[in-house]
Length: 158
Image (cartoon, rainbow, N blue to C red):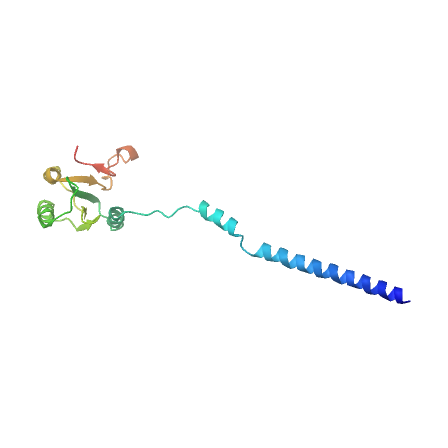
């Protein structure tokens, strides 16, 4: 009879061990299934599209485009130097009076100008004698807007 009790206790212990093992395994599986896997997170982060960092000039150009200026030009000194007071005065005095906005950009090495009024060729020629000019203006209405022929980022000084 004592052996029957011992066998019963052993079988109950085995059943209890098996149940505990199954509960432990289930909890571990649930933990892995619900928790983030760091290696998977790293891989998914590398697949995400990288954030585009804009330069100061690019941000200022976008700002001018957002303000719906039709004519946007970036002026730089030909020597690549910093704009001084004389350069700024020359630029403002020789630009159309209707020019809406001038923004000093790129650590004072560029001025971004935005206007709703056209810069006439003779004005651009005079400014081009002193500065390099990049044209970021919207295509003029009625002209071919083919990407290859658009004014985007065209250097006027050729």
